[in-house]
Length: 332
Ligand SMILES: Nc1ncnc2c1ncn2[C@@H]1O[C@H](COP(=O)(O)OP(=O)(O)O)[C@@H](O)[C@H]1O
Ligand SMILES: [Mg+2]
Image (cartoon, rainbow, N blue to C red):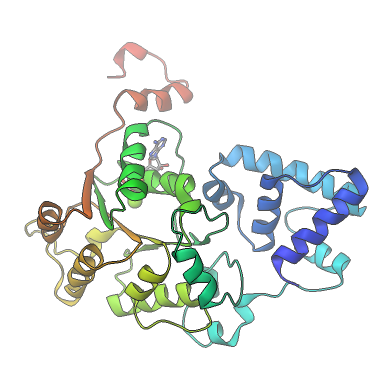
């Protein structure tokens, strides 16, 4: 039994007992927890606040406890529901194809289907505008960050670039701690239904390009019967959103901004390919510095955009207000 089937059979039981189906957030919480996601991730993926998801989660466990006459909690929901359904969840992590590679299982956190045919994917790719209600998402390595205030204009600019202009390569750069990663995660929560695949990776530990590409290909290939040779092939056949964070790690220090370390120069070519070749996907780079070649690309290529993130401005005062800071006249 896969997660959708278990979720459906749970919903059937709830309906039989209460006359009401689970709503879409309840289903989403249930399915995400069955896939061992935490509430923070569920909140980001569904575009709700952490507190809201936590509250709804508590209500859901109470409801399921009443329906199944068991003390159901986040930690035992999977085993109890599996027992009730007399089955175990079929996990794609048991797939020999996935186990035979060197990607840690924890890197992949949502799998929609195990063996989606190329035909299905191609069908969807012929209608890239169609909202996709259940993208395959891997934000397992993304940090858990607060995002409460401001950035509305940055969010709408990014949405316009990605959804309307079909920008292929976006660089978000700015000082460390200014909110680049938080902004990007918030953006993802608002546009996730527009993509087939969403994956976040950081360059904090300096992965070689070949290894990063392998991880991406492995992630994209999990729902396809025939793996494709290159990342760009997945960018063409599906609508993929890839976020590469902490790009500054592969730049030389003490040099002109955005000069790649010797062993990482191939990243530059990869980014250029993404910006210039034809496909239907988007790569977001997050960095302290704007790489030199991307500045040039932005001038020459209409599919490349750069956003320099500034401070929160007046909205930062909301953070101080929430922390009950006194002496408002001195906040500036
Ligand atoms: N809009 C925001 N509202 C509230 N807190 C924020 C906001 N943006 C960022 N933060 C907080 O500021 C800190 C730094 O943000 P982060 O996104 O990690 O910065 P960067 O990626 O630029 O280094 C994090 O703790 C994050 O939760
Ligand atoms: Mg960051």
